[in-house]
Length: 135
Ligand SMILES: [Cu+2]
Figure 1 (cartoon, rainbow, N blue to C red):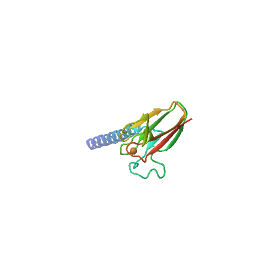
Figure 2 (cartoon, protein in one colour):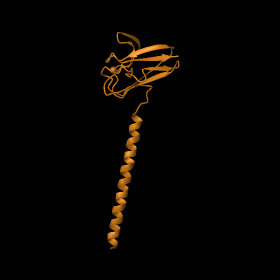
Figure 3 (tube, rainbow, N blue to C red):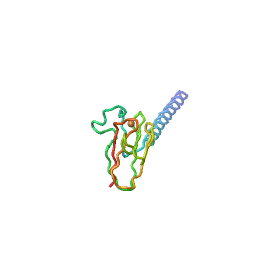
Figure 4 (cartoon, helix red, strand yellow):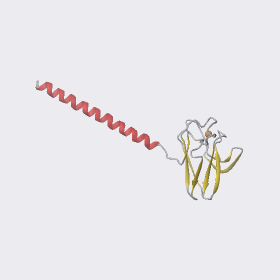
């Protein structure tokens, strides 16, 4: 009888340890995942690799961002397709900045030292256009 109770209590202790280790593992996994998410000032949302986002002007969100002189803007590609952040217009690019092809969840940043209005676009999807206004 005593032997049974000892075995039962050992089994219960083992189950408790198992449950605790599983829950602490999943906690760890969650924080690791959220650490990977890069905060961006401007995001490239999903499904903008097909025309249509330009109708509501949501190819880059926000499509127009106002910043102070000397500040940095970070773009994050949240789509599953490649995109770029390239200064100028599709038929008239400028040499100021070019992210190159951004992989999904890759980011790009640029610091604007001079005030003005900076148009940019995606070299892969001509309908994707955005603007940085530096005050
Ligand atoms: Cu694109």
